Image (cartoon, helix red, strand yellow):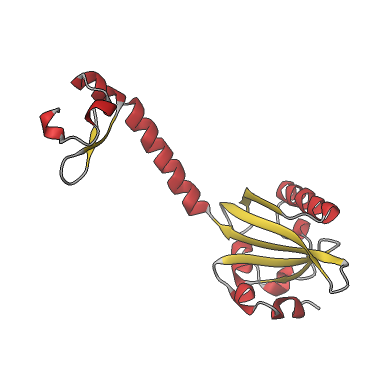
Amino acid sequence: HTRSLCDWSSDVCSSDLDLFFVKSMQGVYRGCNPAFEKLLGLREDQVLGRTVHEVLPSAMAEEITAIEREVLRTGTADMREQWVAIPSGGLHCLEMLRAPYYASDGSMLGLIGIGRDVTERRKLEEQSRLAALVYRNSGEGMVVTDAEYRILDMNPAGERITGYELDEVRGQIGRAHV
């Protein structure tokens, strides 16, 4: 039963990019791919036949169990980002889709999870947010131009120092104003 669940999509099951797992109605892992193993720092034989409580820290396992119970109770997929502390070390931001899967007769067999580790993307977004915060709140005047010196943006301090509002100078050659 475990192996046949992955037969329909060997690409997903062997992917190193997207996480994939299959669970029974009781929350027991029945299948997973190498990306899921790598994230947990466990081999497939250390995951199969176990529950999330046996492979993740207790608080995290409780949170995941609550989400998955709701998916199974309602029969509705759940998509969310979630920060997960994993045994192999570190905190990872996962974009996870959990959905019920069904037998050909329509009876629910369990749950599948497909996800992606978006930790690096989240870190870059946070760095970008912080850079924008510094730019907007700096006391130093800053003007952003393209290669031809056309003004693209100016921070509030730049407006204060030059006496121009961004809307007045956007698209104009910067040397004439600054």
